[in-house]
Image 1 (cartoon, rainbow, N blue to C red):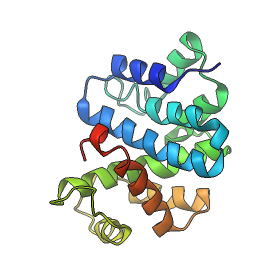
Image 2: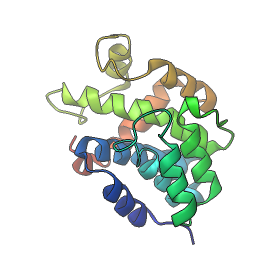
Image 3: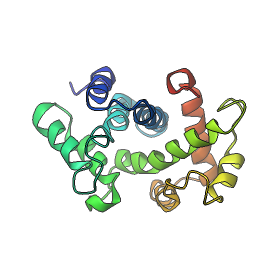
Length: 186
């Protein structure tokens, strides 16, 4: 048996003190769970683990020389996390040069930046995620100054690689995050 989501969450918390970064990883994990339900339901726990751990080393090792390589090395040598999860984590960083071949890897890349962007959208809305619609997210994506650190090209590339409709993709992620709104503080 591979690492469980609870074990992954404990490891994430051990490596990451930042509440904002933990919430980001939980948001990505929620979106990964939603996509696993659609694409590989019997692999849902593994997809959640990938989401929870994809940025585990980012707080302590934020440079392109270190992230996600240090976290991946820890996973390889100290856990039973499998190669597909490790490859997906490597592939979420464009600069790693790791191709995204598995559906899990494509989904992780597709939801990573978008989950962060949806979280930012919720922060400027009176009702948070409660009534957020894809239309609002798409409008904010066009506002370059809003959540400027979010890589819009990565969002577009992820949608293309996963082969999904932009509006449907945004809705899947909104619904997934809405389902975890207490955990995510949305």
